[in-house]
Amino acid sequence: MAMHTAHGVLMVVALGLPMPSGIAFPLFLREQLRGKAWLHWHNGFQTTALLLATSGFIVAIVMSPLHFRSTHSILGLVVMILCYLQGVFAWLRPHAPKGTSTVDAEPKTG
Image (cartoon, rainbow, N blue to C red; front, side, top):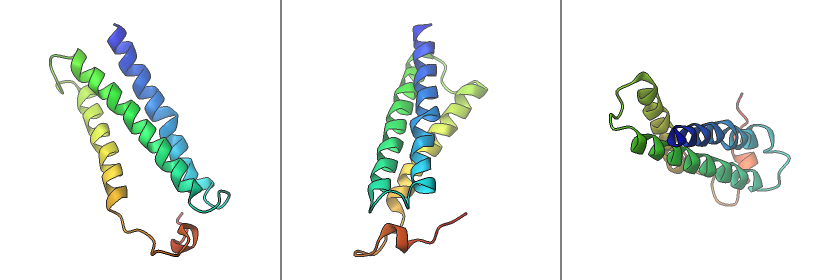
């Protein structure tokens, strides 16, 4: 039961606190934070969320001898794959040309 609790707490904390907070920095705080400060905060929160979620995912794999046979575990695997893909796509995306501000280099979407 302790592993179920650890898994639940890690996943709720990861996907409920640092992930949405990291999303908020580029959406709402880009203009308020000078230079690339918003990007450093965004990266820090997203990395923290991914590390916590990975810990919760490892706990889930260790505690279950039958991997990915229930709807919950399959959806959890899909969520983790999407979390990792987010980081891969962020790493692969084109960056602003040197000497330009990240705020001025991209038009605001939405």
